[in-house]
Each structure stands twice: as structure tokens, then as C-alpha cells.
Image 1 (tube, rainbow, N blue to C red):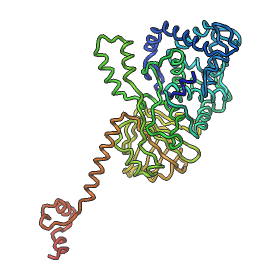
Image 2 (image 1 turned 90 degrees about the horizontal axis):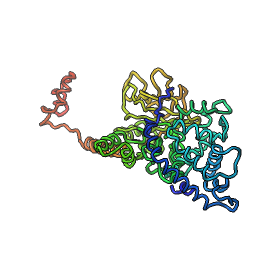
Image 3 (image 1 turned 180 degrees about the vertical axis):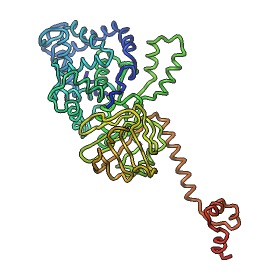
Length: 481
């Protein structure tokens, strides 16, 4: 099992299965139709584990705890221990040191019946709570770290952890617990609904792959982790841990191209020979998680408004912007609409303002959320983050030398923006930048000179005359006529 890994405010969040890859009925029809196949896969997996049994496993048709747990390597070993305990707890009384083939198959089938995220939440909460009715801080930290490792494995991303990820994981736990020492399932569901509705999606995807020997249908995966183009750990504010945590809360508009999916679905629905199951399977082969591309990094491109404007303008897709400032503060602005200058707020329903550190929490969400004023004299020039009628969370003055955090002035350290749109949006931005550069070169090469013979035809003459300037007299005097 470990080898599989080494290869690779508003509670408006779209946390329902329907908005993240298929409804409950869709999942039920897909999983239910393969119940017999699942049983066969579970038996095959059990037999495979029997072949790896240690010397202490001398009971045919049973697996020892050690044999089961040792099948999980590296960061996944802890999960193996928890999963064994959970499967035995469901099928046998007492603390059993062995599990039979029948118990293993029964527990596995029950696990594969978890069609919707609410039932998955309950199962994995109990798993990480080790059967208790609450989580301790140690349980929660282990839950976060294991969920991260399993999600990377399910997404075929090599496991890595940045230098700031431990602080991030602790901030998640701190946001979950507040001043409490324990968190009940009700407390957890209330927190996760707003801050991390898809925390266990990667966990369940991985478990599905292990138990069945095949990947979960692509469109049934709720929270996919996108690839970061040319990403180097610890070079950017973004880390793999942060990326994973963001995908547990941001909508799919940041990881999938909705227009592309609609077109593919339309073309598939035109074929009357495709039933619903085959349609799902066809879409599974067509949908994929989009990559994110770095648009602006103040450390590389310069921390100034002009450089920011140059690198992010003309990008007509969703973006993720990270803002770091003194006090170990990092915020994430998930913006589902293109950036635009003006004195009015903008941003769609999928926009979110998330505090990443020192505590992970969703601050505000929904539309509109951002104001970017460059020219209006009626408003301070800069970037405003916060909804109308709510407290202004952040303000970045046009000089980009500081940031106001709830009105308190702080030193601005870094701004980083990732483009989340499909590749053609980046290509269109590049074409626009190329055109702008060419136009600028034309203007700089153009010399302003006074041509006596063409002065009468020059439109500047009429403009100056409208301004009350006697251009005939001025020109004659300067020219020596």
C-alpha cells in the first residue's frame, strides 16, 4: 500500500456533492452497480496481504495487526494503524489482534458505500478520533498531516513538505479548536462547513484506490490538487501544504474549466446510445485538473504597483493571490473574476478571502469583494479587500510599501499571484502583452518635430487654438519669420 504513494461569514461554500463532481444519486449508481466487483477486489487484496504475512501470522484466512499495518509505509503508516482499528471496531467486539477475511471484506464494503461527503466526514472523524466522541489537538494535527499525505498520494504528487507547512497545519488546528481543548463531531462539521468542506476527499479517493485497485472516476473526485507549473518548494509563498488546504475549501472554478466541461457534456448528451453510467465514464476521461501558473512574484518582479499591474493585467481568468506581511500573517484572495481598475467593488460568488496564517480561516466570501482604484480622486488609491457593509480586512496603498490590516499599518513583505485559468487565457495575455510592447516601441521611436509645410494640417494647431493660444503668432516668432 505504501508503494502506491511513493510513485507519485458566509457558509455559502459549494460543499454539496452536486457542486463538486456529481450528486449523491450519481455516486450511488456508480458505486452500487459495482458492488460485486468491489467484493472480488477486497478478497483479492486480502489474499495479497496474506502473502506478505510475517511469521506471527499463522492463522489461514486471517491477518495480524502487524501484517496489516506494515503494508503502509512512510507517512501512511499512521493511517494503517487507524484504519485497522476502525475496520475491526466495525465488525468485531473488543480489541482484536487479527482480522478475518469476512470481517475485512465486510468492513471494506461498508467503507466503499460512503457515497457522499457527510457520511465520509463521520467515518473519518471517528477513525482519527480513535473511536472517541471528540478530537484532541493531537488527534486533529495527526488528521491534518495524514489527510495531506494521502491526498498527494491519490493525486500522484510526490510527498513533500515545505518549511512553513508545520506552522500551517498547527494554524489549521488552532482555527478548529479556538480556546477549546476538544472538538466534538458537531463542532467539527460546523468548522469544516465554512473552512474546509472537502478535507477528507483526498483521503477517501486514496482508500478507494487501495481497496478496489483502480482510480475513482475523475468527475466523482470533489477536491483535486492542481499542478503548479515550474514550482520549487520553499521558493514561493505557496507550498504544497497550502495548495492542498486551499483545494479543500475553494470552489471548482479554480481547478476546472467550466466552459470546457459544459461543451464536452453537451457533445456527449447528443449521443442517445450513452446511458447515464457510460456518460459519467466518458466525462471522467475528458475532465482534468487545470495547472496553475505564476503570474506575479514581488520578490522576482519587484514590489511595486507598476510591476504588479504589468504582470497581472489582461489575464481574464480566476486567480489566487497570496499577501504576506508582518506578524507572520499570510492571506489568500481567491478571485473568480478578472482584475479590473475602478472605484467599485468586483468579484463573483466564488470569491473568497482566507487567512492562511497564523490561523487558517475563511474571513469573507461571495460577491463583490475587491476594489482596485488607480485613478479616482474620491477614493484612496490602492487595493481594498473586504465586502461592502463589513469590516475592511486589508488595504494595500498604491505605493506597495505597507498594508493596513483591519486599520493597523503593517510592513508588506510579499505579494504572489497564480493564474488558475485554462492555458488559452495565458496565451491570450501573452499576445496582448506583446501587442502592448510593440505599440510602446512605436510611440517611443516616434519623434515629435515641427514640419512647417504641414503645420496647417496638424490637428494640434486646432487644439491649441481652442485653448485660446495664438498659434500663428507663436509659430512665426519661434521660427524667425
